[in-house]
Image (cartoon, rainbow, N blue to C red; front, side, top):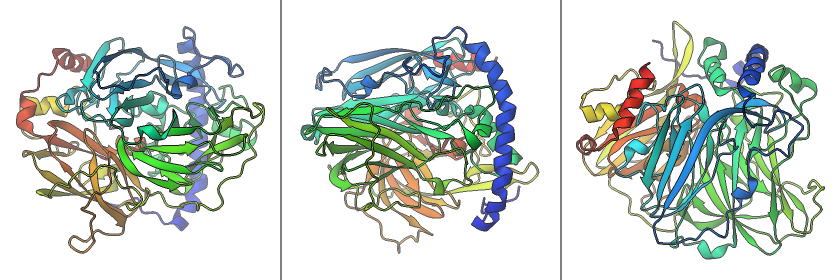
Length: 593
Ligand code: C2O
């Protein structure tokens, strides 16, 4: 195995562009045939839109994304029960029809809304051809690690045709979360939705009157499984598939004409002028806008023309209010911002601009300006906005988070000492023989277990894990853990840690020098998904007080699929006494078949 970072210089990369585009075209054309057939075959018994021109046929219920005033924010615990069916359905989120994987036929999927202290029960029935699992992104799952929904780590996939019921409580957290499939790259095909936890103790509760969700995502015209196959083949040379468009709450628009035509699967119907999401605002009202990047690859810069954004939350952690005009948000991150409807009655663009600088290659079909509309009551409903983008607020060309001095938690939590410290190198390496580019955490490229999970293995006490595909770090004592993450790659990586929030002590470009580079130890940012800059570093700490097997991975789907995932085996003695439902073990038996 030859070590070799995916270190192509800009100059070197350019001549590759045309080759890569050509390959994408060939791939698209080849898959077009497959999709045309499969789409028609599998969808004649679903309720999905089979006519790209009938946009009135809803595949989502945008009204749900304005949170209802009827929801009572309370301290009295209750149980929230949901029944979901995952199925394949052909819809046209941006005007181009393609088979998607949806929960209850909705895109985005159904809202889960609860109070701190509630129990959430979700019965998931799998009606797709592959196994699936649902992860509750950001939920601590303290004491219920097996409900984390991560294939190969905490469970085996729910087999096709079967159901599994997730059941957990939310004792001590609130804020903006989301749920998504955690089986291969399935969430990119549509299996995601918002998860909102309220509490009377939220410090900013009195500052707004309305509460609205904007789920922002890149969107692909080819199913993610095919794209992963291409990405992990020698043809890609490690170049990630670039999105074809983007959606806000499941809606975007794609130019079906001209050169773009060559780039989508042939035979799929494409209609120009697909409608965008519209958010109805009332003048004088303050909105809490919960922005969730539910995409697979792209980092966005979010803004609303003429309207300042006051950040009050990051990944479920309340922040001291800070005003921005443009908000960078990487994959899987969330922010709440306050938006005061204090402008003239009219229509304004909501902009989620994909940072294409962070792609390895351009996609000529992609319009990276993903838009929605804020429409004041009294403004013409036929009018598209003529508002202008902020000129005063600079576009940030690199894919990095807001600086640490801007994101100060509202509540201080003491930073744990670094009782133990681990170095984790993030890299891409080419396997010499096959010329396949894989992601590595130190010297391990993760491949999910198929008929088992590392949690079950830990409980059975297998002792050692196969380090060629499972980098598992045992954490035996309840103490402070420091991680020094070094990114040896040319791309930035949004790393998510299941079951925890990190204290983010610092990040930067170049190398972290222990003892020299200053770290923030007083009330540093806490969140569950952090961007490690290209050729940069990040230092985090957390308290090892949540027993279980916890994944930490790059949330860019292509990268976790290529192996950028490490696991922490927290308090293995406590794992031994977990009472994991028997039916979870039997799902492993069926995935063998
Ligand atoms: Cu959003 Cu491993 O998760």
